[in-house]
Image (cartoon, rainbow, N blue to C red; front, side):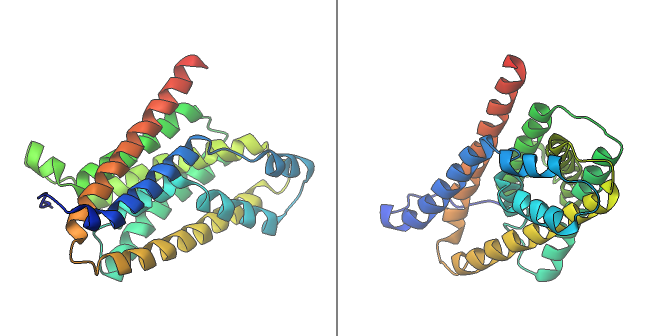
Length: 237
């Protein structure tokens, strides 16, 4: 999609700048996105099947996982029909659920700095896709559904790396993992609902495309910030 980028009066930029600051602030919080010490201590003290605590932890992780939310925000940015939104969100859920469950159950360790850098790259990728960069640069449009599924796999490994930090007891592991995944999906639906409500109001603005261009540029910047932070942590750790 090509955006018009004419001069925009400062007053019209206020909503876009507010959204951009929100996205940038979310990305800064995402830099410290990790397992809360209180949650980690609680999980390490319990054993057996504890479905409700793991549902809560899964929902909390997704709602506070601003890197996941930023990617989801980019995925649905130009989706208007609920049918299309459901398809893409389902592909993302399928991807991250598969690798999250497999990663924890089989103990597949992935360096958290590298996987979080890839998650940051997924945000950059989607922002560039929304800006129509691939069509202008390469004359092709990547398959957005396949990309959403593939990046969902990486987001799932990001989730599994956080779960492994919990050091969950093997007793009742599979039911607890499934409960955590249910919580993740609940959190994703809550985040999605909030995004769709906000987007519904924003899209009614006559200057939506100009604001959308700015928002995607800042979302891309937030992704680069995440990549740089995680790669720096990898090389200095």
